[in-house]
Length: 149
Image 1 (cartoon, rainbow, N blue to C red):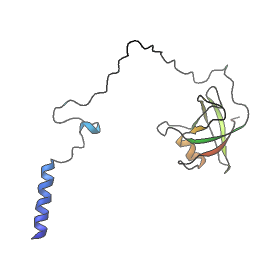
Image 2 (spheres, rainbow, N blue to C red; image 1 turned 45 degrees about the vertical axis):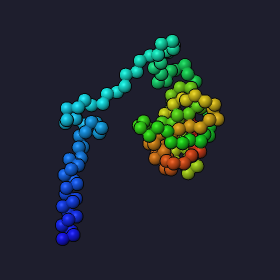
Image 3 (tube, rainbow, N blue to C red; image 1 turned 180 degrees about the vertical axis):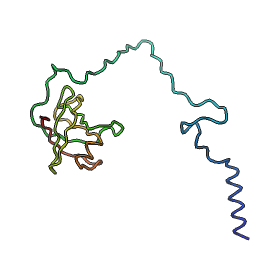
Image 4 (cartoon, rainbow, N blue to C red; image 1 turned 180 degrees about the horizontal axis):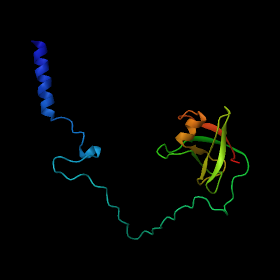
């Protein structure tokens, strides 16, 4: 008797919920109730504030100096949503290829991407590079940066 009461109560509660809508506008699906889906906010410039158009970065210009020496830097995990093998570092002024070596003697050739800061500043490795080097994703790692060729 007791089990029957619990079963009927559970069924009644579930029926009252009207089910879970996996295609709801919150999850990015189509709305079934005719309501408008949420829209992105419209950003308008503020009057009295100067705006500067950003120029696209050149991938690598032939006149930019390339990294020729050897350096050691401490690297952390960079943006995991960006694919590829790369390291953002203040050691370079333009994108270029380099060999990265760890203290475990694992190495990988990747693209160095410039970031502002002092040359003694830290660097950020892509998730692909961290995995290729066998480094823990949650720790800082000291890596050696060498020319690719």
